[in-house]
Image (cartoon, rainbow, N blue to C red):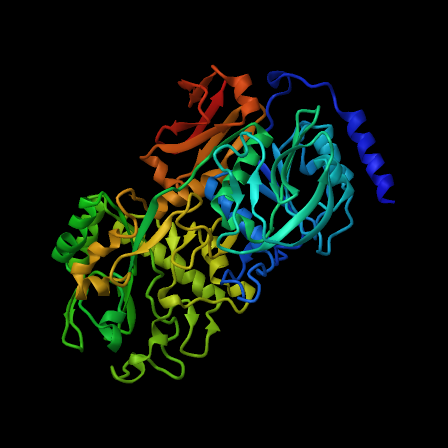
Length: 617
């Protein structure tokens, strides 16, 4: 039966491929990836990615949580700003219209095939994929052992044999754009000792670019239709832990489409400090301190940040729980002496925050509304009127989005959403900002019930990032946690020393200088508004056949670009550069340079919201 299918697919490819044509007769396909998975996405609603990213068990480091390979791909594509769509074969059957637009032309330049072969899938006609590649010129990048289908084997020019542990490293075998500068060792065993190796045999038309021992682990097959079929071997769940493999994947997408417009985050750091505006410093015994004054902000934070050419994200609490009135009021309207005898000068705090914004060194984001439980009445309360050494001393009262005082139960969805929304509105009223990042106070979150999931609610309320815990938030998905922080794929979040809170600055301001040690002299400090802007730019990007990309910078998620240029890297595969060499790059219709011999070039899109274009012609 397998032989018959092989013959059928081979016939399809041979009969359907038109004669090879020049680049501009055929045109490059759109700069967009179609990510195909199996059942790696646990959420049947295709919105939440919630995977435990804790360290693997010591007995076998290749054991990773289900779906981690899918999450890795999403994180990379999002961080690079590469637009993509997802097809999940546990809920969908392959359809040619997944690959083509209404005009019958490819809607994606590359299919990234990552469907786990061991999963339960819907009945599939893999001949549809063969048609997209062979007849319509859509390129294919397939990963690891996700190739055990005759149609995939035929398209790639390999025969799958097995998937077993091995300790041999993967080494580069030939010079090619895909591997240039990544050798001689492409996939190292230095830190892991062993991982799964995919065993394949290749046909004569396949170029083997890297091997793991005697077995190929990186192959390329070119078809007469202008498409390319690339296979990247390795352990599906851990190979992208290594930087070279992540770079290889991005280059594979570039070879598949011909070009890639992307963002990377080398040496980018995000400094974060929590809690200005909160009430816990006035009520919680083990967290008592005076809120920072305007002068303290100036001397202890603003001046050091300016010296290091840095910006700091401050997660602000706009609502203060006033026990005298038993109401929530604006955090920055009263100066008083608390019951511990400490002066709390919140108006001065606000002036200090405003000074930092004006100096360009503070970026304010949302820390919820009050940092405290919505229900301060029910048992074991009430919190109202309780002595400082009684219920007020219990830290669970100071968790707004997860009820840790009553046994780690969820806060109802409507209550969470109201507090997120109100916190945003109050921050806008107080400081004129539209916060994009959100973090719940004290690690209190709700995850027991899907409808109460704090990440889902934050995404639906318009936030773009979940601080500290990590994760992309957007209208199309939410990702709990994040990967590759501190690499080219993601900025590193750094706590403002000594404790990531204004408490540490109040008690040990001399230690704030330690904040800049991890970044080193080459660090470039950014805020979440910039990071979120690029994450969302990829989602809103549109491309057409040929090399033409349209950016749509909205006034919320992409607010950073209102007054700042967006800077992208353009890479061209060798085959595309030969055709495009000497042609002109246009940004917003204005000539911005020409294609040269370099492997990558910087593309600068002018500041301003709305529509921008990039084109080569």
